[in-house]
View 1 (cartoon, one colour):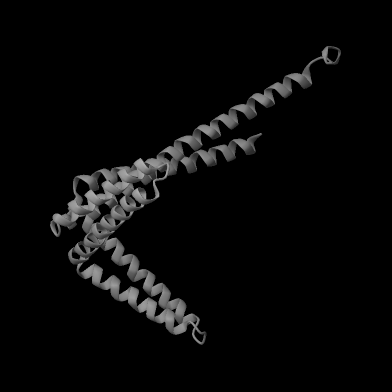
View 2: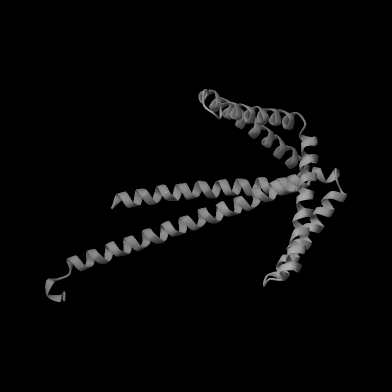
Length: 207
């Protein structure tokens, strides 16, 4: 009887940590939406360090697998990641401008393809596809017309929104998990009490 209780407490603590992590991500996302410039530079620095660390890990893996057919390919890919990481860390503003231009072009091409595809195909979701295409086209034009100034807030806004929605998802998962654990524990306790009453009842009253 003590083992399920201990297991339930452990699950409650785990879901509680998930809820706390989600709250921290939500706070970071809200702060990032307020200070989008700082969020943009932070996301670029994180991106650069991820490239650098990933390149170093890939280089170590390539060295360990020397003598194989993909040794030089691994070395080249790792060197490119390391070089890209160093460039991003040293020039986060320029990297943000380049990535913002790339994002604007993606929005433009995606919006155009959706608009053209919805008109040509004329499927059951034509209205929704047209709306998505128009929104992507408009967003791409707004980012492109305000470039390079848009690089100060576009990536930071996307990064902050990702943190915000991830945090809300973790909070919902943590709260829902704690409720499920409480419901399961309550049903288990109710079943044990019912079993106890049945086993102690007089034999003459049992059918």
